Length: 570
Image 1 (cartoon, rainbow, N blue to C red):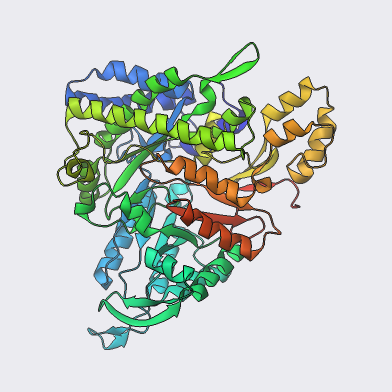
Image 2 (image 1 turned 135 degrees about the vertical axis):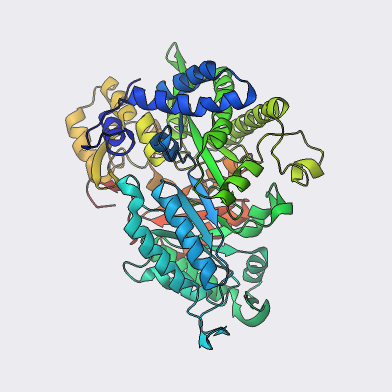
């Protein structure tokens, strides 16, 4: 296992076990052994060879070919071993329900999980409260209470508290929700997204009004011009980085268990749609580890990846049973649907190794073909587990059952997560994102880490360039713009996130979404000088291309970025 200095720093800061004095008492190898042993213990439930699978799980992680989500690495083997990353909790329209949910959220956040909520069932501001004769304060006020609680918890100092707050576009308080983060410091522990319906998008296309529905009475309370609401979303996203958009009807069209209810929310980064009380365990394959070179020509090792996908899917399914759940209702839902989310990281590294610009038609075609292979293989593995262990308990009535599809162990198998910290440990690019820049700073909790793209500097060394001078020039912008010593072909291959047009970001997201069960976490990065019309067009294009949601981040927007240039210039 070859770990970078930054990877070692993050493992020490967040993942390795400590003694009562706070001193690290675990090595990275020990961490992976702890995780492999704990998860493989589930094999005994099915008369499996726990020792055999422990070795397979350990080898996969130790070689940095696969890493599970952060709570699994933090908590496996601990007395309260909570392994899942993603949760959604219901927020019903009563004071008791709201604060019961807040208590549940506190337990989840304390364990390192991230929580999503739909606040769409709460009655609007100034609506009547019959029990007191007073007026309701509305969803946004309760979001502020949840935000304060998250700030206090801080997930034990290991992870920053993470929430997703969602409100339907037809809620009467939608404009208050859209504008809330324009106030400096508001809801800092929340990402927020608007749940946009097909009805709204049709009204927007036709420049029509649409109806607002009081969730308490289910009655129409008024109308708004779709264009007015859309422009407010664009304004806030351009200024602050929030809200994102969830295309809620698109999401529900791929809900595998509609007989259990509609999807109303996602996890904090938007890649995991979940029903109320549902959870999901995630893990990602490091694709950079499957690029092989022969006679200086790169090719991708699909055979080895196919074999490792089988091991990773089994790991995630075992993790469901090894998990210690924070609430009985969550255990019931997670074991009922057995959702897992196997994804990828290192995609940009693969394209660079193959000599393909991120935003090229060949890259988009390759992404779609790759995910068809990846998702198909993951589904085959779930079918094999179903033959060994049985289908997920809620299979009857699911879309698999209704359509006569193959019997599967897991209601979903694939998710594209952002993998920020995991990719740092694995030493690869994040998720399916392009390289952010060739030199930048990464903020991990209170730690600032310097990162450079070693692949490029190794290439520059073979070209005989002055690396010291080159790095000084690159640190000014993070890009190769204006550096004529680097050939145009190389500059295209190392094009960074802010240099890639928004349509090409979305094309890549759409290519992966086509064969991903859940959703795709992908940030549509825009330069500081991007116009509001660019944000608007990005939203519309993402809907047109079949994405389940979209997040736009303009460099320099108020929302705190995790990746920051050495010099704050464009």
